[in-house]
Image 1 (cartoon, rainbow over the protein chains, first blue to last red):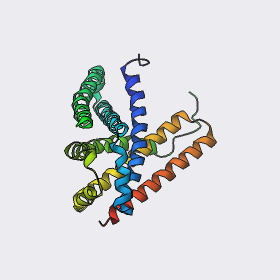
Image 2: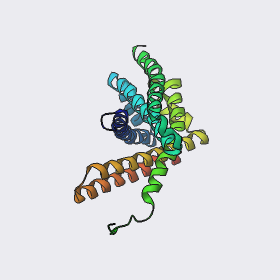
Image 3: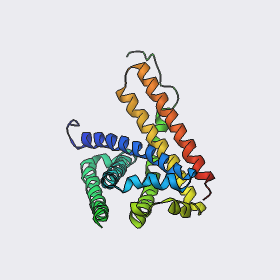
Image 4: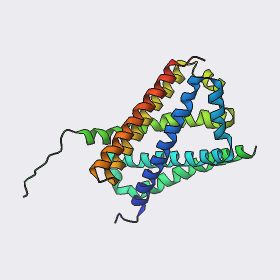
Length: 116
Length: 121
């Protein structure tokens, strides 16, 4: 059974997170390229990331990146190590644990910075 | 057995599959370093022109950022191409969306790459 199981959800989330990261990457390349036009334009632009919406967006972004990375490692292991398919469910929960183990402390540090 | 009328041409999709895994592994290392430095050691409220100028004074960081920009953008564009192939079935629309995607990617690579490699504070 694939439909509705762990594999389907990680597959969907991988795509959603990937699209979100790509959109941010495009914006990030444009904002960084503003350094080529001098300090004023660049400093005014990155100011946008400092408002509360930008700060929450930063937490959502690292969540998407960490999920895409941990799930990506799971995919690489399953694709390149034939025996890994036999423990695919354990790998799914391992990836989920890795995601939480990295994301929760990271989100905590970034959230704390909003209030300091 | 039914006779096969069309055969897959070349190995582009195999190369794409391989590229996603290799570039993905590389991006994880680069993004981990990028996030640790920019978001945790510095933090969003300390990023400004002076900080970028200081970072890009070192050729290593400039090369690092250039590799991350290029590999991540190509990985993302190839991922988007796969989504377009999966979800947009009308031929005309698929051509339009893919052309737009490749054009934007090309422009981002040129703008981002040129600014990064020619930057002088």
